[in-house]
Length: 362
Image 1: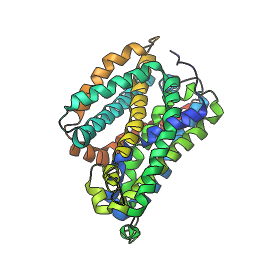
Image 2: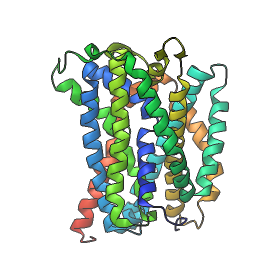
Image 3: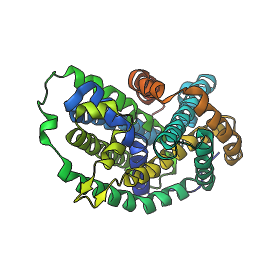
Image 4: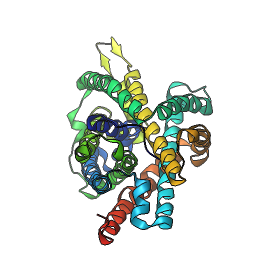
């Protein structure tokens, strides 16, 4: 089964950037500060560096198999049956990512913005929009990314500008107080969430019009998204302090509440909420898209769109069943998810590359 047309490498980079920021824009500063305290920004740099480097695996596999998605070249490399097993595991991974993102969305909406709204209702409304985007195809999602990107950057610049008066440089001191170990521990969850999750884009590499620019687009998109996460982590520590950043589930949202310009411009947390809705839409759409596209290719369907409605229903149920509550999700992200994510974003792609070389498939 083939995809719907081609997208430009620049559009591909935008999708990677927005996916990287995704739900991490609200959640990552907390996990970084929990381990590294005032050195959270250094943990962010380390995690981003390793995460961006990992994208070279995906671009190299894409270069060797330019007309195949991850599901298709897994069978070519590993053989029909083992390839199908690995492909199915990847599909499950993409679907789990989508379900966890949806739960992030539901928890945020029902705890911070609409506390009296049932989480199921909030999730259903958002999934309807995601279904529309996925059914319209990758070209439409890429076009939407080009439209929303300038607005996202504008809101980010406004947020940074308004936060400058609240910055206190003393809150990141003393630097390197407890050595390198807390910084390494802090960087691990960031590597897994979101950077190893970028393996999702191995499902979309064949649909980039200029294959020689895929590697650069992946690095630029992941690096730019990582830079935004670094800036927000740095600002969270500078404004809120390491204790408040680590102790709040959504420190970036709390950060926006701190804005106070002459007692006139205050409480503009809607800026952060809008930024998050933009990025989480693209991350959820692309993860869900990758899962049903992969399943369609695995079972040799001619059309992936027939899977959108039934699997969107399963997605909503999975988001409610897999995660009993928000504290569980936070603990899961910080202690377990990075290992699970590294299996699919680092171990399996490395295995595929090594086997392809040994079997002279490349």
